[in-house]
Structure formats: structure tokens, C-alpha cells
Length: 270
Image (cartoon, rainbow, N blue to C red; front, side, top):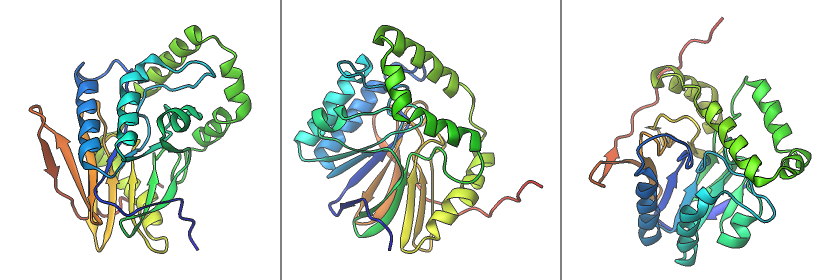
């Protein structure tokens, strides 16, 4: 029997990922655009899922958090106060989230992928880093960085040194360019989406990390890459079990993105 970590039956549910706030990337207005989106979710949604890398770096000291979080944190808290369920997934840039999100903002947070019952559908939710075969070095590093000893060691650094150093390292990591969509997305479908969607009763996979917004839908199965809020400004809405992606336009309109059939699997390298 599959473990169900969360249930949300209300509609609509909004999803976003990979804003990387604090990074010197994208137009200066993008934080304001994201705030407008969160306010729209506060008004219209019943749940908001933030699927990782909301911040380009996050670390929670006992008495300090990065100041770049303030306006967004206040907006998320306003959502919670308005009765919107806010769910936060740690990504590979903001995985050091501690108790502040839950205790101060009322946000439900997860460090690892989960299976959730959403509007009657079993949905696999993940940021996306470390999923699938290969990338063994990163998977080992991920376990080391999330170990309590690593967190305690970093907390020993003064925030005035710790925050700038980690921000520099995070920017260096993000600066390595993603492969083009036509190269990486079919491999993600083959190696990650298809095995997960083959699980008993799982009808959808929603994840971030790969910054190419994508929605494949076929035979009652959905796979969604949420894109980002650096250059794509995309999000997903789930209404009565149906998934629909949208992209923010320059004038603020949200333009629907049509779903496509799943692509054929690319050949594996020999």
C-alpha cells in the first residue's frame, strides 16, 4: 500500500517552482510579478504548492534568516491567514529550511518527494533533484549537506559571512546551463516520469528543478515540469482533478499552455 503524505480535496490548487529569488537573474520586476501571483493564489486558490528553489539560497540560523525572504514570506503568511494551505518543498538551493516556515508562517514543508491525494488523484510531488538513475556523486553530496552535523557546522559561521558565501556558491552552481529542452526533457520522461507513473494508482507527477515548462498528458496520466520564474513565469493549476499550465505575459495575463502527448523514449547511450 502506497504511503499518502498529504490530502487536499478542495479546488483549485496552484503550483510553482524555481523562482531563485536573490539571484542576479531575470528582470528586476520578477519578484513583484511573483508577489502578484501569490496574491492571486490567496484570493482564488485553496492550496499553493511551492515546489522548491523559491530562493537561490536559504539557510535558517537560530536568530536570523536571509532578508531577501521578507516580502515573499509575508505574502505566504497572508495566504495561510486567508485559509490557503501552503506547502513548501526544499529544493537543491533552499533545502536547509528549518522550523521557521512552519512555526512562524504556518507553512507545511517537506524535504523529500511525497505522494499526495489531490482532488481524488494520487499525485507524486517532488522538486526533482536526485530523481532517476545516475548522478551518484550529487546524491551522496545531498545526503552529506543535509546531515545535522553539516547544518551545525555551517551555523557556526556568522551570518554576515555565511549568507554571502553560500549565495556566491549557489550562483556558481546555477550558472551551469541546463541542456536544451529537446535533449533533456525526453530523458527525464524516460528515466523519471514513466517509472513513477507506472506505480500503482499514481496518475500524475509534478516537479520542478528542470527549468523547461512542460505538460504531457495521455491516457489519464500527467507529467508536469513547472518551469521557473526567471525566464518562463509559468505555473500549474489543478481544478477538479484537471491540470492546466499557464505562462504570465508582459501585461499580466495568464496564457494557457496546451498539454501534449508523451514523447517517444530516446535511445540509451551505449
